[in-house]
Image 1 (spheres, rainbow, N blue to C red):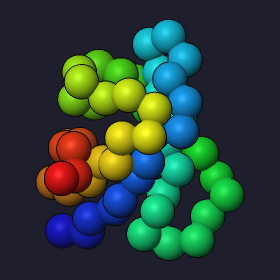
Image 2: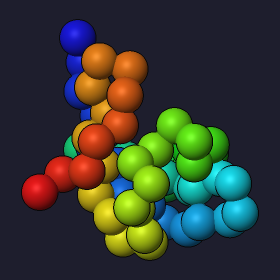
Image 3: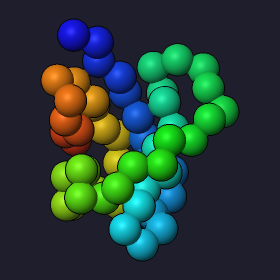
Image 4: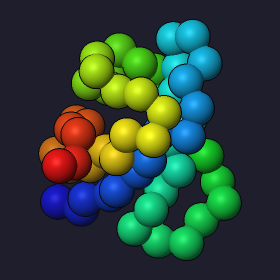
Length: 57
């Protein structure tokens, strides 16, 4: 299973804009906050693995 690393760039209501950090990319991914850990803030680093997001330590 692949794993992807993201950073929360912006929180906009019920959605968050994520930027990939494990590869060079200028694209933002729009994700519903219901799919993300509730304690995220802008700048939080996330790991997407096994179809779920978790906060990276």
